[in-house]
Amino acid sequence: MQVTMTVNGEEFTREVEPRMLLVHFLRDDLGLTGTHWGCDTSNCGVCTVQIDGQPVKSCTILAAMAAGHEIRTIEGLEQNGTLDPVQQGFMQEHGLQCGFCTPGVMMTARWLLDKNPDPDTETIRECISGNICRCTGYENIVRAIRWAAEHPATEGASA
Amino acid sequence: MQVPAPFEYERATSVDHALALLERHGPEARLIAGGHSLLPMMKLRLARPEMLIDINDLSDLDYIKLDRGEIAIGAMARHAAILDSPLLAEHYRIFREAEKVIADPIVRNRGTIGGSFCQADPSEDLSAVGSALRAKMVIRSSSGTRTVAAREFHDGPYQTMVGPSEILVEIRVPIRPGSGSAYEKVERRAGDWAIAAAGTFVQLSGDNVADCGIGITAVGADHFACAAAEDFLIGKPATVENFAAAAQICHDAVAPQSDQRGPADYKRHLARELTSRALNRSAARARGEDV
Ligand code: FES
Ligand code: FES
Picture: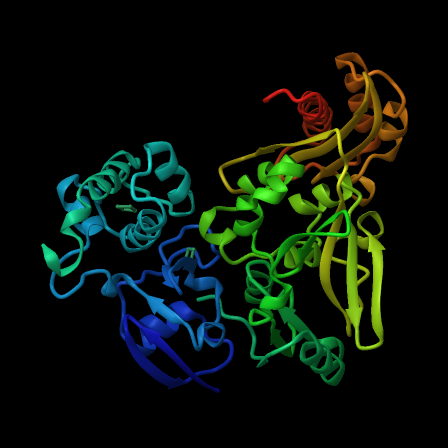
């Protein structure tokens, strides 16, 4: 079947099997390998992307179900060559070690800050509870997201 | 790589369209909403539908509203919407407390109340909430609408009364003035299925229990409920001792199985302890206390 969806502002049309999962569509058909693929069971959150602004686990949604929607992946987080504050926060606060969980956490964090620009650490921890990190112990991830909350002015191309 | 077996896919544009597709494709067709129960089962070949009918476009089933003295929740209401609903928070805190411990915020953006009920997992949280509140399930087919009590909705694990050419469209909960409700769950890790969980409401008349509901999940309770404990409480003073005695009835009535989530006697213990806590908090809320 044919699916058309917007990914990071660009429209793509591809022929896929109905059983193709969105994560494989993004990685294998579109070559957007920034979205990672881990547990395959909607537990770990490394495959998190945004659909119409909401984070979802792309290992548990069909490409066919995403057709007609706006998808945003980690590749779409930077705008006009400027890193998103979330990305800058992860640099500033050393929010990653191996980096496997990082794209998923960032897409969740961006959603959180869009609806709540000044979340406390408890809110941050609750919000990223569907994104598992095996390395950092979360402390620096939480600090990175707080950093982003405190530096919203750097958002977009204005920085 | 886990990928489902091949299937056909079609998107429904209305409830009538979905019903027509179900009728045309027969019992091998399945509806898919959030997909967070069905797709994992399809990856493991525990479910193998030949046809998936995507109902995510049926936004007319996505609502939480007051309707003729009852709260009506559309089957496509997402967990996240139920968690955040001011209407439910006002009348039934049990929803918010149950939703807070269902999976994680990302999964809650997709999963739906209708999907949760129809998946009918024996450890599912909302099924216990529905039983506790004696919700009514509105089921539609091309020949009309019928209503089934939440406590008659399940027909064993992963089985419901929804027929192959029917759709669960709405869940209705009566408003009970002077009542309070609560949900208590113990799980192995954040977002996991319950080892055991209990949800209750208590409606007071003076110091006495005028009405109550007890829903229990993951421990083999008949229809996710414990009617014997409710019968014991109704008409009695809303005291810690009476709630403990009711919880003991639940302890004796449930039929948990030992598995990787824990031994049966531990689950029984949880059923008692969590029921007791939920009843006490429900009653305190009914009295207007902030607990
Ligand atoms: S790969 Fe999707 S949640 Fe783990
Ligand atoms: S940085 Fe390695 S899993 Fe999070």
